[in-house]
Amino acid sequence: MRNRFAFQPWYFLFWLVFFVAAKAIFLGYHTAKTAELSWATVGGIFGYGLRLDASTAAYLCILPFVLLLGGNLAGPRFPTDRLIRFYTAVMGVVVSAFTVADLELYRAWGFRLDATPLQYIDSPAEMMASAGSAPVLLLGGVFGALLVLGWVLYKKLVGRLPALPAGFGRLRAALVSLLLLALLVVPMRGGVQQIPINQSDVYFSSQSFANHAAVNVPWNVLNSLMLKNTGPNPYQFMPDSIAQRIVKQLYAAPTTATGADSGNNILRTPRPNVLFIILESFTAKFVASTGGERGVTTTLDSLARTGVLFKNVYASGDRSQKGLVALLSGYPNQPTGSIIKVPRKTERLPHLARSFQQAGYRSAYYYGGELAFANMKSYLVAAGYDQLTERADFAPQEQNSKWGAHDHILFNRILTDLNQRPATQPFFLTAFTLSSHEPFDIPIPKKFPGTNETALFRNSIYYTDWALGRFLRQASQQPWWDNTLVVLVADHGHPLPGNSSNESPAKFHIPLVLAGGALRPEARGRVVASFGTQTDVATTLLSQLNLPTQEYAWGRDLLRPGGKSFAFYNFNDGFGMLTPAGAVTYDHVARRVISRGAKVPEAQVQQGQAYQQVSFEDYLQK
Image (cartoon, rainbow, N blue to C red; front, top):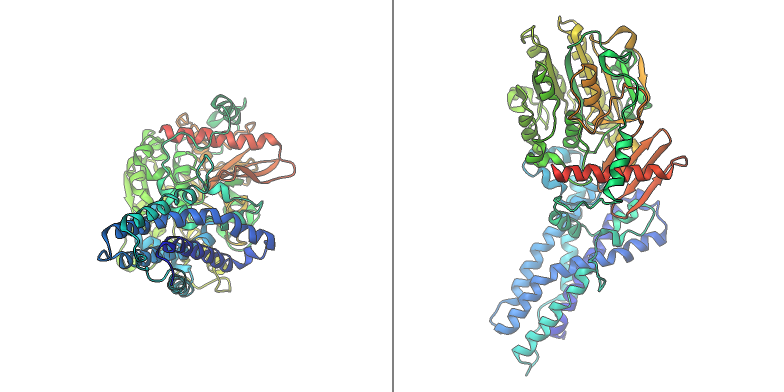
């Protein structure tokens, strides 16, 4: 019969074995990525990951060990065993739910589950729509298997709590339990070293997937919940004076003229209407004019041939709410979280809606879904749009999508409203599409064969492009068209097609096209090769209208030759820096370069680090 004092070590071992099994399930679920690893690397995932597993197990042991301590003092009438079993069952369900959610979220987002999904907790319907393409039955089966595994492990390793040995006093038993409780501090901290364990301690490989697989999911979730972006700056790579100087050099103004007074002006009217259309998930991989597949975005490719194409533009981040802030406020993304979740900070940002209103424009924002999603509404309200149109403004029969109104319905509403507007006042209108978001439901017959996720995504991009073309053909017949500039840009890229890695530049490559009747004839067909990012769009646009750009400190005029050509983006706790020399990606957790082009100089790594340091310090100070 097992001794009562062995209960605590066996309970700790139970959680440790459970986490090792969960790690094996993660590797099995992502078989394609696991197959790229050597056996030694797979072994390293379990070996190096064991410290975080032990740390998490120790935290989960605190309450049961306290209950056992109290039970030893209170005597046999205290329901110690029953309480520990109840606690273990509840935590088993929670940990299993984290484990299963992480399996699919990692496939979609490229990083382990953390507190990020909590940003969408106030929009449960949109969260469910995002998960529409997930294999629910498979994940449900894995969840059930984990619960059964936990029950079997608990029964075999822990079992019932034995009674105190005969003649062993309660006080002595309590002292033993207290000693074992105190010893939990060692695995909690990951050892006896001076600095407590963190994710970087389990990063051991040059392959990002192996490092990610070694992370313990419950530990990662709790750690991200406890971290607050209030300072000090965790991205301190060098003295602030050096970082500031490097960033200032990146944004050094070229000596050439800009705006309407220069040869770079592409507009034939000083105050055009502006249609600012943000295309959901429009990755450059599906846009032929930016090097992607042919035949998917025929409308956008046609506009690129007859308008102004920026072929080397990259998204600043990987989620919609991050893209909105970068595009409309010209503000960089954060390595974790998003400034849009902090209204007191976003209220201090510049915004295109305000810039145009100050120039006498009427502003409007159109979205077929819920504006409350990801806290977008507070950001847009603070911007001062004259009109906000969202899902609730569409008739129920028009809401034939899980997200809301499909894109052709959205464009129909915009066209109707524009034709009823006062003809004497210019407009700045922002439209955000949604049909090319998961689960990729579309209201027209599929153009491309296949039922896998890539095929569904390809068809959804085709549909939005079709709806865009239909809208623009009708718009071009309206009297206001000749005085209208159309800005077409994506909110972010996508891992599909090709399942680009989380840090890959291909995942962040997006189209940017300027079109419309307000373009000069000689500007049509122009291709801008300079590297840029979403934070440059606002400055580029305002410069063409000779409107102030000083507030948009993180933007550059991409139509102004002679400046630095670079793009900077953030993935989860890391960054990418691109120049004509190539790309470098950097992992903040491991504090090392992930990839670096053969011709990329060491100075480019330092430029990326300086940009990250200064931009995040600016975020802290907002």
